[in-house]
Amino acid sequence: MSLKIKKWISNLPDYTPGKSIEEIKNKYGLKNVYKLASNENLYGLPEGLTEKICEEIRNIYYYPDADCSQIREKLGKVYGIPVGKIIIGSGSDQVIEMICDSFIGSGDNVVIADPTFPIYEKAALKCGGSTIKVPLVDFRHDIKGLLAAVDKNTRIMFLTNPHNPAGTNITKEEFKYVLDKLPEDILLVMDEAYYEYAMPDERIDTTEYIAGRDNLMVLRTFSKIFCLAGLRIGYGIGSVEAIRALNKVRLPFNVSSIAQKAALYSLQYQDFAVKIRESIHKQKQIYYNVLEKNGIGFIRSYANFILIKVGIDSSQITEELLKEGFIIRPGENLGFPGYIRVTVSTDEVSAKFLEVFTRIYKDCNK
View 1 (cartoon, rainbow, N blue to C red):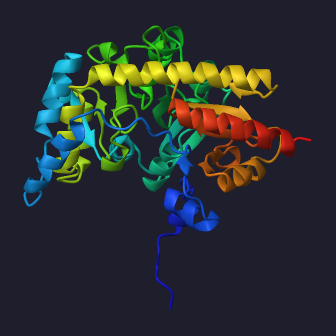
View 2 (cartoon, helix red, strand yellow; view 1 turned 180 degrees about the vertical axis):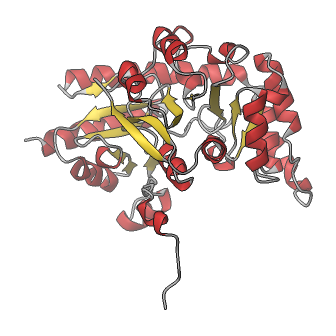
């Protein structure tokens, strides 16, 4: 007799994570392996932050603050927003799940770009909902197409800015157009995991619109530029009514005490984040110059990764890069066959990668 697993679970899309450093070291007998597949900040924590985080270990016998009060209060001051409009999750992924738990039921749908971050679809399907997918146009959100796809059963529209996995942006005019056209009973979720990597003149301060829009929610995270991917902490900002609903479905003690303190401390290192952004921006220009010089196509990115056109089955180049110690994400896993996605890293690692990649690219495209 087999276990009676729910039938809908078999329909959930799989999430394919990047390979681990240890896995590749063992498989190919390598000493140095660089993980450029998951868009982490490889510059590391600012000086002094590691020690502060480690000090919190002595208190781990206590349960964490269930309300994440300190970090919510700090974020409230940063954005000038009441704490009742802020919720903390174990990564922004968990906030996405809480949103779908609160708004999606059987027969409801969410409108998303295609391809996009897969957790939107997975969270909606888990709640008995479905997705309406609108293909990207020139690797960018089709704003009018997304709005046209909305129907009487739509409850949420997810937008990703900068877009993952393409790295493209949504302009302020496009954002305001969606806000003006989207029915007020449909929640607009702006997923801004890579917000801090965009240059100041490239950003939309979406949090400024929260006060006058009950159907807007903004998601951000400490996993990217703030280097806390391994601790899993992100947040959502929305209306008091929406956040109250999310808190009802949120599991108690969902964010560890160490993650809360680390996020709180990291906000004291804004200058560090600015330096990282500027370094990544300079590295991206180097990438563009090398790729253009070698006749290799790419998509200009507003995040800390670049989508690169390899011209063949990306799994072949991915495998060759693994042998050289570089873990990247093949486009087939992201909805972009014939491309690879590469995390922009430090000066030294980027230089090594570009040298190895251009050689492999030329060999594979002879």
